[in-house]
Image (cartoon, rainbow, N blue to C red):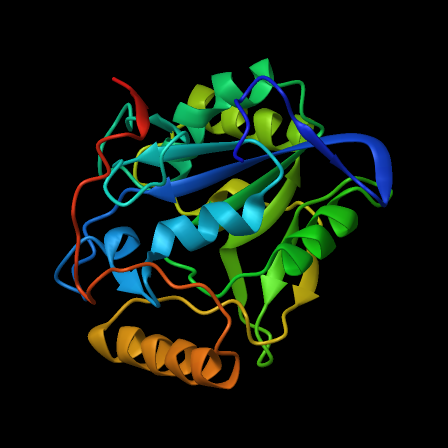
Length: 236
């Protein structure tokens, strides 16, 4: 079960270090043509799968509540469609209130991401000196929205930007600045669903996996069902 933002979870490698996950569900989804996190893949919404991957850590969703599983804390963007850095700034008070040592930052459109990969990110972020750990594709491309940040580092960078030119319209790359970054390769489980072709590929993969593992539970949902999750808790 997803915890509240006030009870950060710990993990085996650093038992004294607490972790909170921030999932971003804002954005216009212009290439997809509809809200990506609420799309159905394998009987579950995309964002449901992302939140599940972050369990048992507490999760704060910033953006829209559509498709978010019940019981998850949802915080409306203070500045809608202002970009991921502005969304992280919205989440900062909740992160600091959680006493977490590490913040796992996730886009809401990563349906295959695994908790094992998030644990690896977390462990790399806690190395000395503490630095952001960022998912790296096989070709070396970094996915800034599948990363783990030491809380103090993230808070310091957000405050620095806010006191300078502001956080609106900023990329996460600009948030990193000249910080050392630790790339963490993934095992094929960090896949963005940006286009209808991406969505079809993920659905086909999950369908194949369900046929090879027939006991895998599936929800009774239709592909494309984007019903609003009315039971998700929202701070407006």
